[in-house]
Picture 1 (cartoon, rainbow over the protein chains, first blue to last red):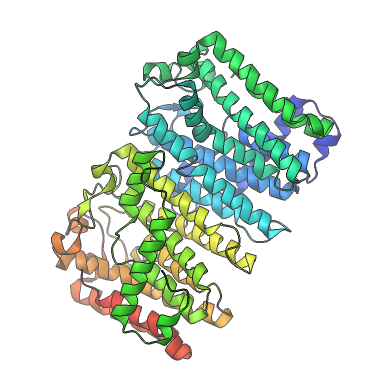
Picture 2 (cartoon, helix red, strand yellow):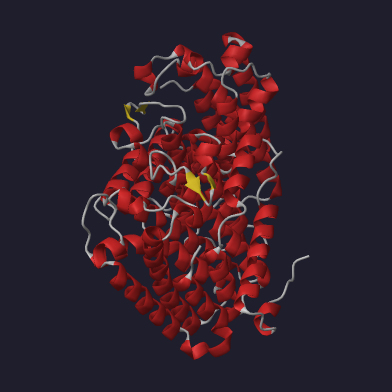
Length: 304
Length: 304
């Protein structure tokens, strides 16, 4: 059975134990949220489960849970928000991997959805995972404050759409072979990955007061960009087996990255700068921001 | 300026004038909802507008407005609901036309989105139109009753997902070359087109009491299926220029249809039967159900 309190924040698990607990928790929430593999249409549901379960480090869910601990957001709300954000993330990976997009055969060490199934199924998997994210987040009686629930839906929808994640992917596609300025690159990533990371933090912190909301926004913006800088660094430094996806892909496909624009050393320094900004935003909140602080460290030092 | 009352229901415009007014109205709502074509990313936004504007007969929006008149749903809520449903419909057409799906080059007499732009853009257009539907429906201060708004979001999300429209499309793909029973075909269409048509009616009728909600559910289920039967009949009887899309496509691609299963005469009779069921559900509501009744006639007699 899952623990229905924020006990992990008070019993001082170390970060790794806390993260492991939350990763298991979100896996369990996703498992019970996704339709059964034998429910009609079976192929679609199997492919949705294939694409959304056993997925990566769950950084977005961890950010959501960490923000919920700072803002004392109800556990059920945090579970649902983390689940919705991970469903959106999973849908975006399925569509991004498709032949007409990044054409990637490997995802998290397994064949990507369109390779394991087929292109039509991958298209529908992404579409249906997006719908499911909004379905779980609009379930009845989720929040005591219904306007919080409507806000969460609106934040997630904006973060996913043409002025968020999908828009960032469009800019990314259009920038292949171009030399972007650092500020253009930053804008692209702010949309492509930053918007959803920011949404994860804001949804988890939906119960926060104005001061906390502003602080976690700043935190999220910086940590979202740091995440991408590190991703670009890993794309150069790691090999495919440790990365779980095709390494060197961005350089090969002539995409501008932080490394190609700043060079490796300056990219690392920039990640550190963004980390510092994120940490600074949390200063007023002391120990209640512990998990957010630890996550910032985890994200900027992560190795897969 | 748009009229902000249900005046058309009381001044007794004839159906054609009422429909023309509502078609102009939803076009205007969509036009102001979709991001400007020159907003970044411009290609994506241009393609979203290309795919969602100047679109067909707007049957789903008309159903939404008609139900709003029966249930005295606020005009702003009806506008927003109609807009959200049309955005979901537009996204589904863009993805359905893609090469990995139905591979259709023509939509509403124009090149389909992936032909006019490219496959990657079409994929993102569909994704972003879906997000936008949930974004408009989750705007703050839409409904006096916030639980109505959360219900609308939930109904639309369910209707769009793997146990609604996307699921119906998956069953459709899996049924190519198979001989389905009438009941299997009905289940497929209930998901593929029926679920969203039902959502259009339920969202428009969100302000209705229990009796009205039950009646419009029955109405919607029958009219949703009738819509599909007529679509199958038109696919056989019309030519591409009047249909605005490739005619004879379903038969060519060896897809089961009501015509292939029942024959043309029985398919027409079945459409009539479904029409009768829909009309019967509206009997208790007299003149306030006028537009829903007229729409049922319009849908079963439509010729493009």
